Image (cartoon, rainbow over all chains, first blue to last red; front, side, top):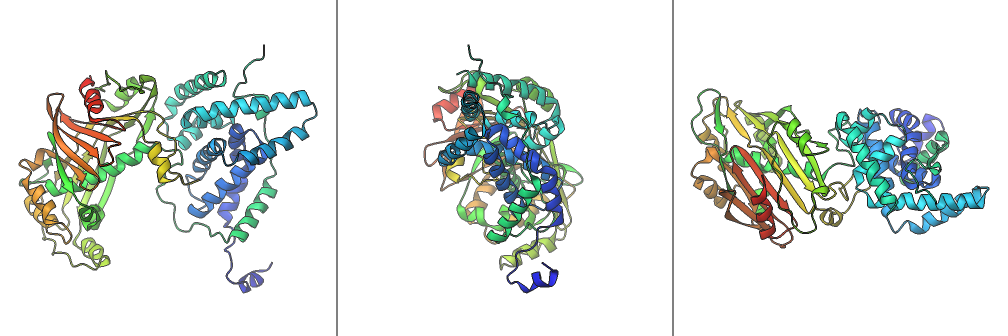
Amino acid sequence: MTAIEGARRAPAVPAMPAAFESLFRREYARVVAIAHRIVRDVDEAEDVAQDVFVSFYKRHPGDAGYAPAWLHAAAAHTALNVIRSRSRRSRREESHGREVDRAVDPAESAERAETRHAVRAALTRMDERSASLLALRYSGLSYDEIAAALGLRKSSIGTFLSRAEDAFRKEVTR
Amino acid sequence: MIQPPTFDSPDAEIVRVDTERALEEMRRRIEREGMRPAAGTPGIVRMPVVSLWVKGLAAAASVVLVLTLLTVSGVAETILTIFEPKQVTAVAITPTDIQTAISDLRSFGTLTWSAQPNPYAVPDAQTAAKESGLAVRVAGTLPAGVTAAMAHWGVMPKTTATFTFSADTTRASAAKLGRTPPPMPANIDGSKLFITGGPAVVTIYGDETHGVPTGATGASAADALASLPHLVIAQGKAPVVQSDGVTVEQLQAYLLSQPGVTPGLAAEIKAIKDPSSTLPIPIPVNMATSKNVTVQGVQGVFVGDSTGLGSALIWEKDGIVYGVAGTLTESEIMAVANSLH
């Protein structure tokens, strides 16, 4: 579509700003990875990522300095809301079905489904900061990035992280 | 025996995504839903996962700041401490008072932070004490259902701001409301107040992050209420206000003569016997009741909300302002407050 053709359409939806586009390219995979650590389902993680980027798009400029930190925190928060939410349960079970189909070994896929269920249940029972912290750390964020996303001092992250790991172990064996 | 899953279980292996396909999907959604990108420069932003108490603290601080300005008295010559509270008192405010121009300091000039309120979480009481420099007090008695293991600690470093009065700003903000303010006396216009708050330490028992309103998903007010922590204990250096020379009696008279300040509020403020050392605690009359109580051997203000669900207790001792609040009864709150050591 040329600029002139675009201008003829009314009322036009403004084009995606270049700053947002480049932010999306830079951060999409990480946002999905964080969400995936929590929802443990690729389709669902991608749904979460889309919601997070839409929410950012409407409220914040793409070149905001805080953009990555905001997206990382929002990815964990939104994913946690998803696993807590009952209304999404049916959708979740649908996508769970697809996941099982993809796996080759039925025993392995059943074990994976069980693990996913146990991990999600444990995360639901944990406090949000601890659950977010695990998701952020295990999706490869640095201490600096975690500090920015969760509003913590870098020096305390080690302590918070080891507590979160203890809490996870306790909840997952409950 | 089957091992319990670890957080790093194989099902969470690296996810491959097709970013270009996702970007196309995003474009289609923008088009379909007619979404407009956010315009303008980035503002101050709160992360989605942000503690409820950060918001509460900021809101409380701004109300206290305004009432502080209303109650300052004494005669300032050079840089002078005009407000350094040693005690607390309740001041009833009505919905009308809350809606008046005085509810926002920025209607009268410019507030410049030299050290913004920037609270952060710390792992425990020891770290809180070390980082704040305060002798942090902990509760010896906790109500049923609350345990020491549920404590989350936060530190707010010392915060300083300068407020500069401006007749132009006052006129402009009053004009927006269709009002004509009384003229600002020449010695107030351009004069400065230096405001210091904190450091402070906050302890929250419960999960302080659940259900917090978020930019990402927008939790409802009911969620926020349901997530109110059981118990919150706050302790911090009392705020101090200094002036660079404004005649502060005149300042008080000027602020209280603003259109919209109810005679009731003006009378209550003027009735404070020692305004330069009394921290006024605003009590919204339609939402809460208050009474004086004795706590830790000094006078404090007990506040109960009209629903009976929550209550709070505020007092000052040895230059530190304490607050205990929660979804608790008066006797439970009193027991916690008196057990702080």
